[in-house]
Length: 416
Image (tube, rainbow, N blue to C red; front, side, top):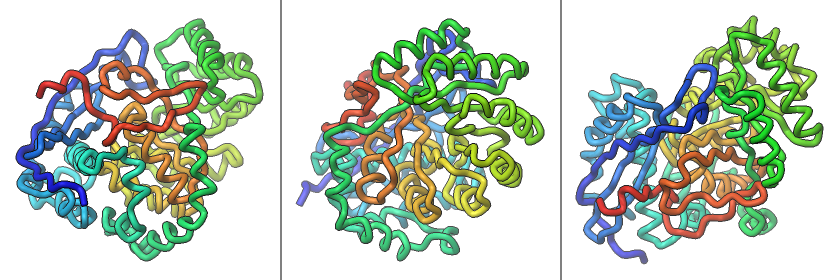
């Protein structure tokens, strides 16, 4: 049995990292500043649990304040006991009688819950001396299910359903464990930021091809449709017909615009159209999905909880599910959405608000334990110099992380 580790205090930290000109930009966010609302769980054994969520500026301090308001229930708790029924813990935190009013289950308060949750999983894995992916794979199916909150999903996914999925795939895990040796495929988002000029996009794409990537994302959604068409065709010509090209609109089109642009962009054969319109408009996504088939929609960057994902899936409004453990309520809700997507036979391709640090663990569990296809994981390298153990991507693949925890410790917090 692992040693007893008790949470003595909870601190938040407002980490901000300005990016080089053009990096991180899209059709709505220019000159981005990547910010992490960090949770630090201090313990009686000198081990610290670290959790992160992504924001883009001034709102970061608000999330940090909410982390400390939500954290009261965690103080004095032993980590193994806390995680033995974390689904119930997560629901109590999400249903805080006062802070719930600010959501419910969305916005800054849900981001704070995600940071806290991720810190709990980090501390749990460190306490056991293993990386997150190994901790999750070592759990019995029933233990995994007790980590999750299925409330409001009972019409689509129950705990019994989730247990059945995990048990069904358990005997064939060995057939999927080769991914631990070969590494998980990645795709490159950083080639085509919105603020990059055409020459920068071409140079980035050539370099990424040389580095082994065969899937690339381009930011579109310009006020000038011809700019999007020119750049998409330019990138398709450069990478060739065998590579995959994804187009990310960042919610900038209305439904009529999306219908027109998807028709015009058909000649570049996009693997998906990402966030084509407002993230709450399920009806528009459903209409678009029906109209542009077999072209497919990807979304999740701004879908805040499992209930919204349920509605998108039931409506047939999404194909590629881009759930992000730094947008929903952390690792726990991410796993719930993964099982939900499996029920609807839809693949998980996470958005990486964590720069891939946490998700490199989660996609391994998804593939080996849940049976999701190992498509690829988004790669954004901009903050790698700030992590103590940055994700290692070589020849276009994520190497399997070996260090205990979630890989989200920040160098600047080593002395805290």
